Image 1 (cartoon, rainbow, N blue to C red):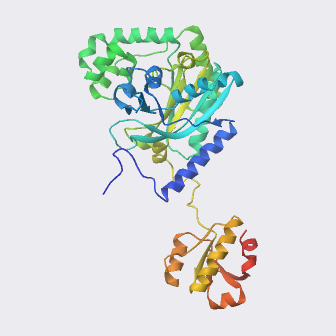
Image 2 (cartoon, rainbow, N blue to C red; image 1 turned 180 degrees about the vertical axis):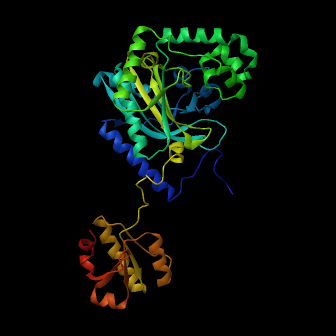
Image 3 (cartoon, rainbow, N blue to C red; image 1 turned 90 degrees about the vertical axis):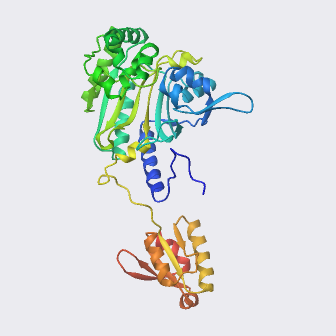
Length: 414
């Protein structure tokens, strides 16, 4: 038997119905904020992610799925979507037709990680990218948008953490301070962090290794490395979020795992998830558009992991019930079967969800099947119904029945 690849999952009914419900809820919130959908290819040139995400990041070093195609080009399955959106923004000259764009995506990403609860090799993200503004109010809007999405999904026990890395100069100053502070303890770090100390010091703050965390816990990090402009930007964000009653925690250890971030970074975690507690993350990337060949543009976005968010849903607050059907028709003989099939065809044309048995089951078994399908109404067609061309329609909730002519079924059920 051939099975699915490790780190991938089949989403089967009725779970697929829940996914559709949540995806529609996300789209509903996004439409209120006037975000437009963008769909990019699953495969991209590997160089796109090396240039944008960063050569020394774990994503590029360890997690990307890459291969050489028939044209001897290095191709990667997208590990994240921001780089692809920016590539499309530049390639199609969107900056020439729209000075300011608000885009969203919903699709699968791929990373070669060790599969565990909430972490798959193929996973789904919903995210937004706003390009064309440096305003701190954009940062606030996408954080409030994400908060609205999490509420619409009934995600429980979540917390926003925010920080500012500052501009490029601020980041370099921060890296220097970190190196100076950690130099005496370098031998206490795991092998990965000993390498990161020289290649990408900020990644040390992300490490979950106990020995590394013990060293980091002794650090007293602040935002003193921020220049005046970046400090004003960050303070404005915190001021607006507080006024809008968005609860958050300022976390100076939060740096995110991608090199393109500048200024604002944020993350959402949930205590309902255990160790892998991050649900969503994002921030500013004011240099990325220019670095990939476009004009200098301010930009900001986030990505939400649906698999993890679904694990943190409060079922008591989720307003979701699996879709049922309006009518199930049970048939008693071959002539009734043909008539039921014709009626279904007509009802479906009028927009009514309906079904029948296709396995020659007994009447009792057909009724059980109707119950499994959560049918609102059930009708049985036999010899008498074929003669009178009318059928008893039973309301499965109340038990009441009413005789309806075949040709009047659609108007009755609407």
